[in-house]
Image (tube, rainbow, N blue to C red; front, side, top):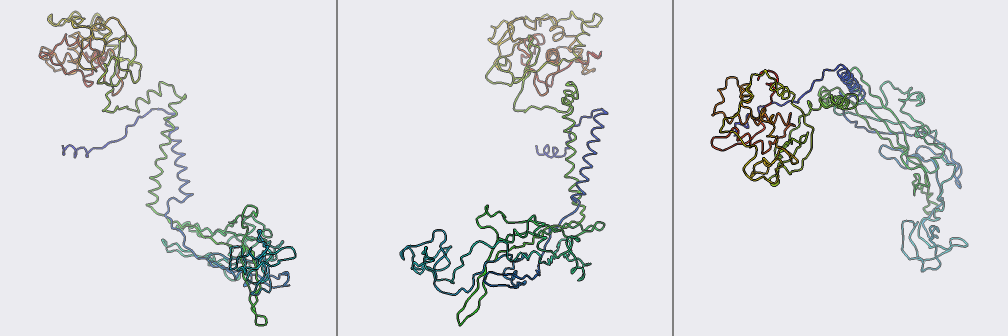
Length: 580
């Protein structure tokens, strides 16, 4: 057992191929394979599938420059420089520029009425809980209800007074001149796998270049005008400056580090990252607050600024690739499966109306070999009063005669067997057509036992096994064993001896010791005659009446019979070819 398993490992299995000699199909096959090869090569070159890649590691620093003079309500003309409009909020990989502002001057620590927003009004002191506070409050409630104006009373709070009352930003934006500010973006990148370092300020760029370069004429210029950045994002700076927003600056590095095609340059693009429509968001735009403090007569005061502005987020992504032989082999191996599309298309084409049904069926039979599950025994049944083959499953309870077929197939004639029949009917064939079995082996067409319920020809014998309970007919009528052709093709001893001699030319004469071989040969003759070419993996079942006549003509000396097996099926092709 162990040695058998070891030998089983020393085997090689390969796919079965069917070669069709056709100029049309051959030309179409090579045309499709050529088109697939062209697509594979183009995709390999376009996507650089022959390279191994490493993601970028980067750092970003920015420097904003610009000066603007602004007329602030209640303040006057004020000059804003880089500290005023960008120094309050500087984050990693981003910078903020103030574009609009609401100013609340001369705030001091004290008590003052709360702003009456969202129904925050009062009638008596009971409506104001001392020490209370919520997210919308500007201070801590003192417990008093005071006048906000002539008609309105609100709760008094301890806060920086006077409280900021304006909420809507000025239109147009006060710092719209920030559109002309510029920013220098310095981006240093590294690809650790290749030990490659570069930055967006290229080696050939000097001080004179940076002072004069403009993005409109040079896409690699690292100095950007804020108005141009917003415009390339598809927005209008004057509109966005009112409430503020977020602009994303995308720097993409797609580097090819191969020696003949070395290229590693940045590509800049811009897009808006926040929701720009005010009526679609609860808190539109972007704003923050900061204050400037001073002391007047020993009292600390401050000026509160609610600044609206644009935040620019710099995002760097990309990769570098270098040729790798291993990666090329992996890509080639992964694309070999694309050639299966040619086979699928040609198989589909053969099955369509472009080819006849006969050609398609012949191709399918040669290409596909059906194998039945060994646990499910499928029997093949043929009745003399039907011109088809029934496929039924073996049943242990119901007689084979009454089992419903799984499928019904047309009978495929064995042309060799038909020619052999014509050969037998020729008068010059040197066969003794009058030869009979020995007188003691003459059989009676009708059995002496009572007729079984499943029998239709009145010649079947009872059987204890359901798979042997099969008649030669589906309806009442004469038995096939009464046909003269049955005696000539199945029981004729000279023909059976000729078939056995064709199999083994040196076999001894079929005397009494070879009666079993004649009996099994008779079974094969019946199958070739009535089944033609049986369906693959289906076991032909011989009717009980035919088995009885064969056994009576060629009985076993001890009365024991092993029964018919598919391996013993014999065709009469030899006789048809003139060899038998």
